[in-house]
Length: 93
Image (cartoon, rainbow, N blue to C red; front, side, top):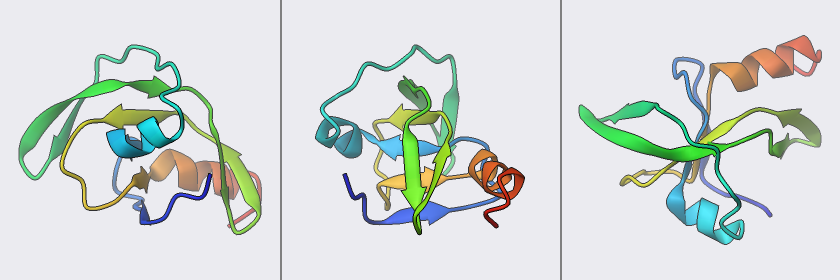
C-alpha cells in the first residue's frame, strides 16, 4: 500500500502511524505497548506496535516497529531515528 503524507524526523523516538492508516492496512494485530506518546503537549496511549512491517522509500526497504496511535495527526506516518539508523546501517543513506 502506498502511504502519502509521511514525515521523516530524526528527533523523534517512535515510528508512528495514524489509526486511519492502520485500518486501511486491514487492522493487522498489534502487540501491546506501554508507551505514552506526546503530541502538542498532550499525552496519547499507543494502540500497540505493528512489529517489523517492511517500509519502502525510494526502492529501499527497511524493517522497523511502528506504533499505532489514535490522535489528531497532520500526517499518516512518522518515521524517526530508528528508521534513519537502519538506513545508515544498510548503507542506504
